[in-house]
Length: 213
Ligand SMILES: O=C([C@H](O)CO)[C@H](O)[C@H](O)COP(=O)(O)O
Image (cartoon, rainbow, N blue to C red; front, side, top):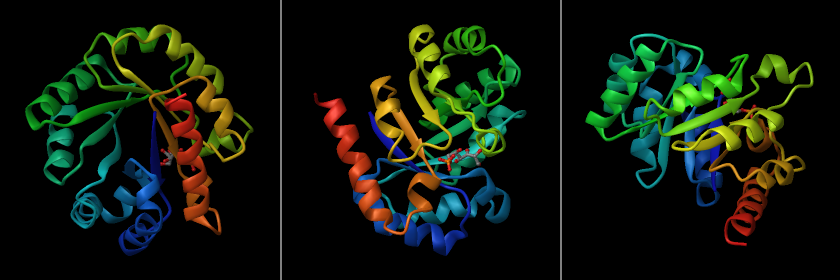
């Protein structure tokens, strides 16, 4: 099980500062969708250059032109690129094909997919690397989370790795870990804390305990 730090509400220098603080405790650094909107793929380029030993994920949430957008994000230095599960199979297939050429990986974000079980089963057959359940900010604000959806993908997905995102905090992490996802994605649960390093360290400790138990 790995820990991914999601950077959403920062500019490039702030992103680099946060990663510097917690880098020893995270496995993957996500350049979040709002950062890509504000700063472009330059954010992926600069963070990958600053931290060559970390895996960088570009959260493009691709909905169309899968092959082209994966090519651009891969060229910028991303090792993992996100595509939306709600899109057409053709887009996901194009993304997977290009990622294979580039030596990068595809994470499919199931945000707002209504029938998670059916769609996860279909997407699992398309050769993607990760399938991620995700409650976005707007539904988090209504008190929702993805813990039940995580159980569903753990049951249905046989080929891809599983991931979970959306409002995970230190106090809810044990419940997430119990379901044994391969990747736990945390944004505000780290970046919104006064002592980011201490929280990331504790999260990594809980994940390691569960992984090697
Ligand atoms: O993908 C995300 C969201 O849609 C904004 O782009 C976040 O990175 C993801 O939800 C993780 O962040 P937190 O919910 O703050 O943990």
